[in-house]
Length: 325
Figure 1 (cartoon, one colour):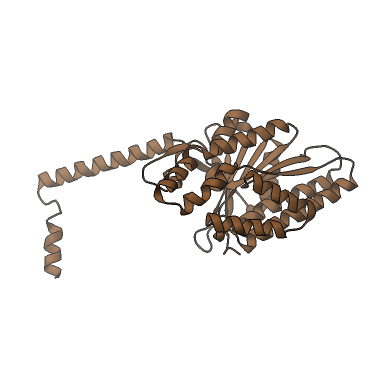
Figure 2 (cartoon, rainbow, N blue to C red; figure 1 turned 180 degrees about the horizontal axis):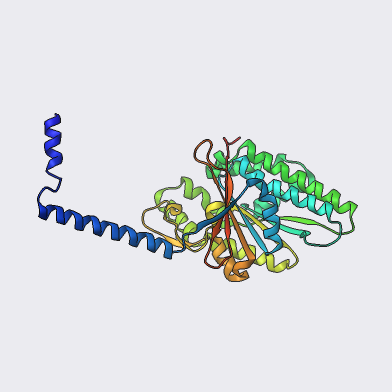
């Protein structure tokens, strides 16, 4: 066995000067192609890490980002996982802390829009829960919609805790508004259209033609409709700033390959939500923080500041998400 393997390997090794010359040429060509690939990646604007910040500075970074811009987009690294939800609720509670410490109008925005992954009907149900504190109808509606869409894996204890945290936060904000003359508001809006709610079941459970049609809609249309709904509400409320909490893949800038999102073969290039917001509001008015979970125990947990050619950095937050609840 050893002799046979050695003989087989030798047939592929260059032994004569001409073979060695050809091998060197192939190697050189390979290195040139690799270098060209690296250069082309750089030309496409692949961000590099300019510096890092501790995760403990996230609330401060988000407040600063929102003070300097109209929109702050925070990525949800994994649906249903509480570690990502707590990034948002931690920031919102820190925002209320800042309001309590700043009774007069100042650098702290007093009116916030919070856009979540709700369709319009789902948003109305959730706002009813926030108003009266009765979670029963809301939970029943979520169980029913999860059963239809196949999203039962998203209906986690962490997700329920997140919604309860938002209810407690709005109650806290109401108490603050009652005590101070300066009104503070948090308005929760659904960024999705009802088309999203209608197509999700067929995308996940339908037959192949249905799944292809709905997946194509996800690639070519969904984020532009998200933008239209978000920008329409922002224009109706010019004195509000906005926090958009969405799947972190939706917060990529530039033209990207969305083929994986389509779940069908071929390379499908398109744009995500920040592209449209940049065009309407200006790049400096849209701050993006994507999130990722660490892949290995002990891996660094930090905030990476990504360098961009326009000197307006985005950020990527690495956390240890732990298991979903």
